Length: 234
Image (cartoon, rainbow, N blue to C red):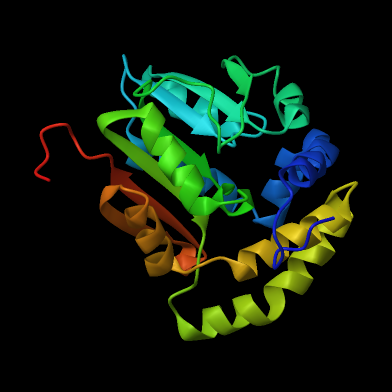
């Protein structure tokens, strides 16, 4: 099992998610006390996918987020490196494909938008993935990331950093068949950059108009950005 502080082996990460796929959605809701549903709803509003648009939901897992984003009539594709997660979501009526975020099997400019929910921190190379994502987005298209972040209120930040690892590990051990996977996920949350640092990584990958919205006191944040249009000034 890879540790969050070390380089992530993509195959080990995929195998980890394969192992928890059958109960992942249930465990995720249990661990977040149901806030995951609110975060998906808010992410969908920020994404604002419209009929006629093509949206890539990257690292979509079982496709629960993809269904949410498709409610407005957009064509939304669920993509994930874990085949086990996709298989666990086959009952959902959305198209699915196995895909590596660093080598996406799509032509340049294939999508109007790409979204990633609570999964960017599992990519082996964050900036390289964001560059590759920009390749498959149309000029002027958008990126929406919902990811764990750093609470802005000092007492909550202290509690989060001091107790979240133990709490999530304990909850994961009681809601999952693979408690070690949730120990890894909890560690990855604590090691993840804060809102501004992630925004700078997004901008360094070539995205513009980077901004973020804190949810649940900053425990989670939504980052939004655009790919420069063809007529943007150099």
